[in-house]
Length: 122
Image (tube, rainbow, N blue to C red):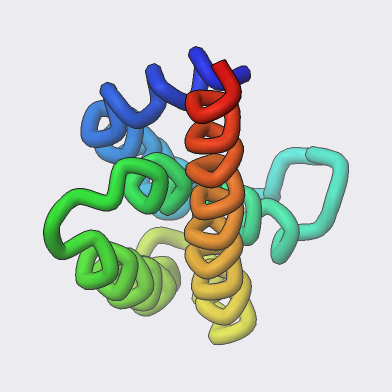
């Protein structure tokens, strides 16, 4: 587990950019109906933005909190653009995205502590 977290730290930018591109594509791709995926729409938003913030918060590059704020602003822009591509923008989606960003930062801090504990033990 620690090795995986170290790999995420090492490749944080590539992971975050890939996730950001994927979120953008999935959020702005015109659909007639949403695909039948288990869970609620808000849960999907929470998971996506948790995954986006996690590698950034795990690595903590300079300005990482501003990046998190940028993700919130970016997700708001996506919500504003969605009606123009046959999708629905919702303020509750923005709230779920923001909650995901906070969750990603909290989970990353817990993971950082795990890494530090494991490194100190052996």
